[in-house]
Image 1 (cartoon, rainbow, N blue to C red):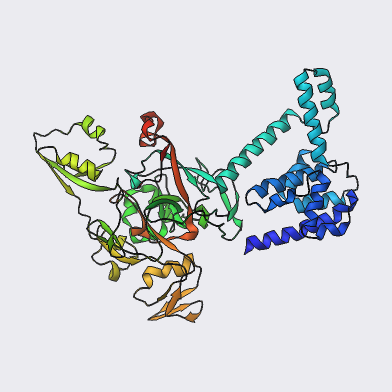
Image 2 (cartoon, rainbow, N blue to C red):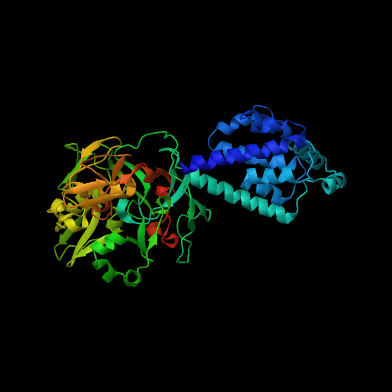
Length: 531
């Protein structure tokens, strides 16, 4: 709603500014406040055809069209300095109002046509090699720019274009952890489409361009929380499909301790104090209560596989996912941790393991090997005489599993989990204190209600509640490396408003995320939408 209010207020201010400015170009002031006609007259002033404002109706393109019209308009009144163009782009209503009140600013003609004629003449003289005439032309031209201004405008445009593309269209990501191996590997650089699942307009608007949430080499965030805009998403080109990889903001990453190793949620650390014994830096931050509170779009980015969509019922039995009672489709490169016991005379050859793609990640089981491997790699290991290969039996530890309620998660593990129902927008459920742990964060945080529980009575926004209707869709995301992934099994649902985009392809890949370890040429330009 705040986005709509901002745009409406800006449009009213822009109309008032045009009302003040049009008489300077011998146009009726009233035309400045007539919707549609004001932009047609604007196009006439700068020398564009009357249909040109129709391009303002095209999403994304309209931003560039409007900026160009604003710059042409101030230049049509003889305002050629960098500060004039910058002001028109930054906030046109204010720039045009100041222009209207500037008595020295006179309408000198349609800038688009004048500048085009100048550039055509420059091109012709350059082609003819007439340096003297070209020098005289540039000497008297208002479009002449210093080298410094050329550099400033070039850098500004490059940063603006890159930030614009990153914000609305395509963003580059790198895989930092092995949670999606062997489908997507540590050191894979991906391009992710933000258009496929609907462009999410920016919410945090005061930020350093091209940075997500941290300033490198510092302990500082790269944005200001205010001012901010409400969530809004343009129509999607396709639906989020079951078993497709997705990029999203970490749903529980709103309050986090950030160390040089990783981010921990405040809730995660309070539930599992053992983290502090393993990370000295975390221990210090917890003692000082030095955590960061992030807005939705500045939470860390995650990439996982969407294994269940809104309305699905998910359950895991002996490592196999079941969706609505039927076995789910398993990724071809899905991995599990396997324990490998070997006879003393058996030698595991490093070259052979490397050839099979085994060994990038491993654990140790009291002297025995432990590898995160695919089913195909498992069969290759089993073919070696003297080796015993068995699946790692994940411990039963419901305290680490969503929804973090001992009565619900008793007997659960990452391999035997659920059942869990995935909420769907518009669906209404019976709400009880018994099933509330599944939906508490949805109601309270993701859908911004005031939730209160006293005894067996649940109140939402001050009213007793025994049902709840969901406002948005939710998804269940898991890593393909099923025994080495923090995912929905630990922190629950992925809200639709947290969806960032669809992975497209791998444009670069380094071993172990380090260039000096080598480039994986066989992964370049490989699809990131792996099954």
